[in-house]
Image (cartoon, rainbow, N blue to C red; front, side):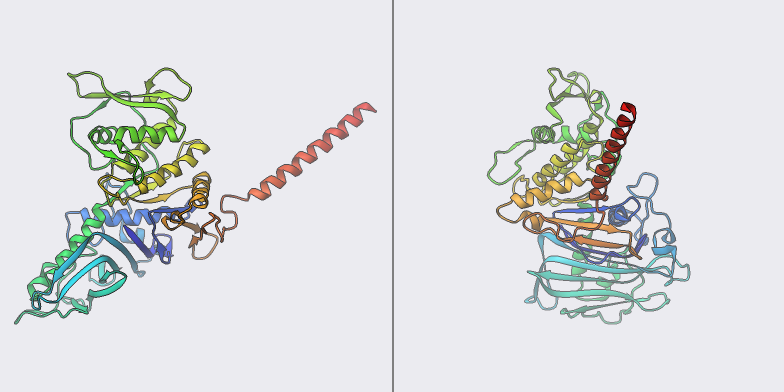
Length: 470
């Protein structure tokens, strides 16, 4: 789970400042305010990690990628290639990272949290392609730093990088060159680090921990596929519901044997019942089922009994909002434990009351259990005031006062130059103590203007009646 994030000189952000990441992290802002860029940046790093090209510092994406960011000049702040993209983040490890110094075995190290930062520049090489200027890992245990290790670019020679560590003594092998030729993508120590040193094997663990972090990230875009009347499933479990929800029904069918609960000491239920209960919580349906149409065919139909109806109908025959929110719900419960789910506008096409109830479902997601806590993190870009208001209410109602620690809210303020990402402070009573001006529009002005216009109409009506009577 990510705990901190900061991005500099990426797209519209000169500096986001430090973002405190929580199990539910929300980003609000006007259209084109830059709030989507934060999720895009994380997805671009994920694409890079999963790219087969070990030398490409960034992979901006292709035709079928989650994000397509173009060349370095297209993504750097003010499109100025002299700017350097810098970023840092910190994450909790699902399992302890433990290793020993190969030269002094009594020196044992373990970490439960890793902090990483890097700086990317396009002016380091003769080709002016993006290259890592520096990268650093800091390993922490119980909030205390135990060691750090970094690579720094020094010159435009064939082997321009040097490596150094703090609180750990790297021992060089005899008659080996000191400098290193390149990094692996934006984050990785090359094999030369191990070849040149007697006790640097642990850097492979750092590379792997980084790759596992980005493998745990899933993305769902703002526009999901329309519902179909029939779905084909060949028995294969998809990795996710897909960027547009195209694998939603396949994911549901693949999860039929999974059992989970929505909180501690609550009875476990099947995956399909969890999804149906979530839709019912949002007051969208009465019943929901996925049924095979024939034993001889691998085709399935999704039947829904809408509120107030006595008949089951096909999914395309109910409100569009159900087909749009179904991938959201399935992804949230389908993702494996310790997943990070990035979503854009999960509330799209939903009635305000359903948007409010969606917040309750998201609280269920972060509290859900399957062989222990699932530890799901939700990073959500949204425009929904109703979603936020329900979270505020639940924080106020929470007697344990833990929910406020599990929610982090940010507002992309484009009225400043440069734009700022402002943290909204929610107290234990659910109040936002630093509510931005016109956060959801100028409601007070709208109400007062409506009242004034209504009064003017009444005066005009009375005047016309008096004229008619005369």
